[in-house]
Length: 293
Image (cartoon, rainbow, N blue to C red):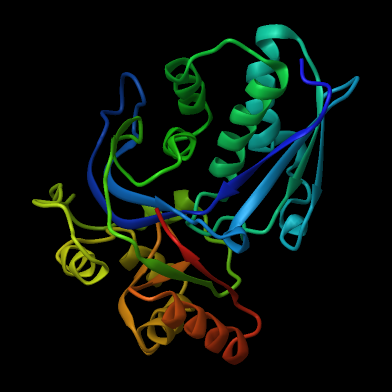
């Protein structure tokens, strides 16, 4: 076992499109789970990442800090980080002190908890030097939540099924501005508000060759959770409007079940300028500019 501590970033997961294509039967494996098709990317800038740090210790423990840590008060014992750690601990009985620096807003549609769990699996495997392959780790991740396997994968991908089928998706360079109005929105409630028939999958017919081309392909696709999320939280509407109004914004859309929205930009300078504009105009929002991949 490593005697020194290790750390790993847990980047925000952004759904560039999200199609709800069906639902599993009420009986059987994953009963009632929704089937999805989603293009997922991950933040590359530390401003849009949590961090997991681990050090050897006599007991397994979790401490929380960071600007968003207060939102996790009361859920410490059931935190996905501890659940992930206990899965690996069952393999060898080892212990560690885990520190989660929480930067990403909670229940915000960018997979913060799932990213934290995935980072925990990665970093404890290294700390404890557990000989477990990536496929086994991915199966463990799937037991923690539908988004954890793709967060474990950690790069641009299309996820299908209930999140367990993951295929890498090469994409051109682009930037995102993330904005959240400070609202926690429960995924379960958004799915419950989903109305109408399920939509068809719409995989890319070609590989986009630029940020502008990516935006064209995305405009022809959907986030099927955007309408119910906006119904439940009208505060999303001004976030989308503000992003769309920024110079250089090619597309604005809700990520996942919200309430975080993203604006897609071709140029770093435009994205960073937009993020500064939004931070000044809406100081209570959580805002970050980041490359994505």
